[in-house]
Amino acid sequence: MEVKEDKVVDIGLKELAKKLEDFAKARDWEKYHSPRNLLLAMVGEIGELSEIFQWRGEVEKGLPNWEESDKEHLGEELSDVLLYLIRLADICGIDLAHAATNKILKNAIKYPPKCFP
Image (cartoon, rainbow, N blue to C red; front, top):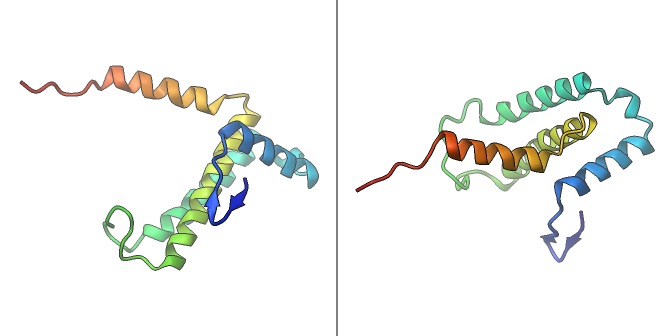
């Protein structure tokens, strides 16, 4: 992912998966990246994400009353969860973008919009 003039360039799930694979290979971490280990690591990160909201009660969309440092920390924890999810899907041979798109379609059928007269 490139940052240009304070703007982040869009990157796809496959590109992120490749970057994560390369990152793990360069550090000889692939041997630790079993589905179980990645899932447990992701659960740990979800715990860290949960701690950010633990005592705040309900918060407004956009987090208008949050300090920038708190938003940055939230972004880091959200990223940790996302990256472990992408790595887990890749290790399991799941095309996450395809699976997510199919799930949205299934949910649209399962939960159709309410029709109003």
